[in-house]
Image (cartoon, rainbow, N blue to C red):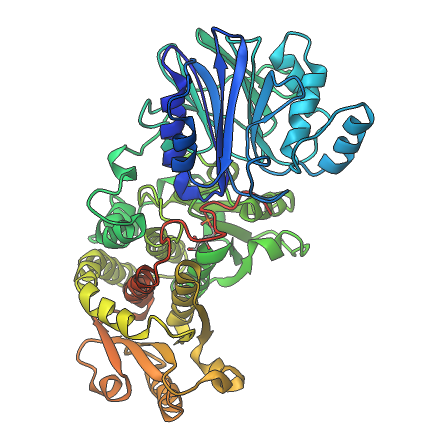
Length: 610
Ligand code: F6R
């Protein structure tokens, strides 16, 4: 999704802005731009173009881009095609005021008409340009006031940064529904939509709340609501390091993040499991443990990959915590007028903590009086702050657009959370101890599965040109089938469908043709025999079975063309091991098809608009 960087300080802004944009590239974008306040001439230099940041860099080569105040943006088109004119920053008619914006201005069309009647000439098709003209109309020498006044007329979501050619001493930033963070340095501030653009410079940050704004000067900052009521902000620390957001020796972030899952899973468990007592220590939910103990119903809500984790969570909460559990797409939950009674706990799962639908689901659940927990990776993100309590993933920054290590950490956190509830309800300590011991062994087993990378690459080479794939699994592995199919389609643009294996007979079996790749999750477990029958059905219709199976399984080897053997673990842990080969399979197919693995077309890392 769009990225914002802004700088005010003593240093040259342009290299800092450009570096920041590069750090945000992973979020997905189609155009980029920068506006600089050029002290010596009292004007703004605005350069923007469709394409990659490298194209912008090439365009600016040799130009005078000096200046210590500027804003920059990577755009992901919503209103108006991706082109040079629609790229941000957008300026007012005088060219003196420039704004970059993430989010969507809902009443932009009405505002545009109004401004046009007043004689404003629009250049772009964007909703954002409305902001530039509104602020310019209200500007009487005080940029902060102009932004405040302009925002009063605006309905919708925004994270913005604004500068004015006549005010070389001020950068104004504001947010409503779209994240904005301020990095606090010595005599300088960096505004960004994401901490990864800041941590190279400082780990001291301030998170803006909805309808809050900041006026940044080199000698200090002032924050207030957009209605001009002063607010007080604490400087907080970002946990992530620069090293964590770099690719190291890997060709893609996605591969790096797949390969570091043994470590990220250990990080998610660290300090939270006691194998001696069978206790799970989750500091973030301690204050609400009584309500958790008496929960009568759990609703897990999320989008995309996080929703798949929620589907596994449904099995876990019913098996381990023995509490009635449902899973809902956040986008459906928020508009469905869900019934929430006393005793309902809503758990939102989100890597970024900024997904618009998941955040809206949290707000809807809170409005209806539910206790809301967050299972979130990004510390300080909006969902993390707005939920009543929660458990962080602690799996480190996930930069690849396709979610991988966050998914496996979500599974581990869901296991731990279901045990936390279970121990307070019916789960005996000896049983909890067994689960904990099993869970603690998982990172090493994942390390073992990762060694199958070369064999999985060979399978990818064999099927990379196939246009249709099916992924099938049952029970705990049904969500893994969905996740495997999602990984393949989102990064390799190959059509894939994931299904509970039993559903195949109710229609999708008609799709199976000679040589079609059908991926089965076929580990030993409760429904193993049923899965074998499904495999027979596929084989007899000429489908080529690629099976993830328990080590040493001869029956599966007889039916499948290719077997990826994984260690034998209890069913609740199988999704963690099983998804790893499917992530690698999708990765290799995408690479072999020449796809931009870390920046798949049309996709954004964090979907902060509906
Ligand atoms: C798929 C993927 C998306 C996200 C979804 C939710 O690989 O990354 O489906 O899982 O957009 O994002 P978060 O977890 O940030 O709420």
